Length: 290
Image (cartoon, rainbow, N blue to C red):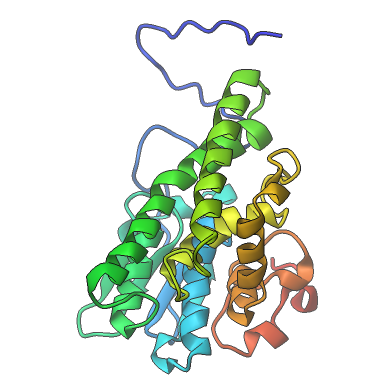
């Protein structure tokens, strides 16, 4: 059956009742809607986030740095519930004027630095500690190639396929087919790259893997949009093997848990202030917060 015809008006106007699941938080203007300061903990890095794929990228990197013994990468992670509009509080908007998670304050030097956009955070942290991003040359460029690939490609997987397949208030054939085709093309890009390399950018694990895995790895592992069968992810054998390899890293599990407020209770760690929180403060032990 064909989709019903829609004729755009001469001038678009905002209908606050439209938008499906996210209608209550989506709006066509920027800026804060409430005065609300952000909490600040004891560590040099203050992360304000939620364990969506974009948030998980950064917590994976921080946990990998700590796993490698970089004590200076200790951080506090504070939950930003985007479903309740926490990203529009004045304190959050000061750190990220785009009102999207994650957002990071780096207080490790004399002058505090705000860092927003997950790709920028990954470069900032990798350069600061000299890990997971080569310092120069072709190897560095290749990692950045794939980091930028993720930043340009994931919106088609998330805001495109994920929205129309899983979240849109009406299901229409054209957008689902359009973005399913693009998502499969992207998976094929990754599968061909991984046919010749153990990791996305070559022989070494890098921020490129950490940026791509929360989207495409978790999609293949059945954790994103319940779409693994629909997109026939098992046919991308190289991506599947890579997804499982990254999933088995201890820092990946911890990165997935930080600022998670949904899914299995034993995988939820609403806030992270110390490594011991993974043992003592998971949500199934502390119960819901008021």
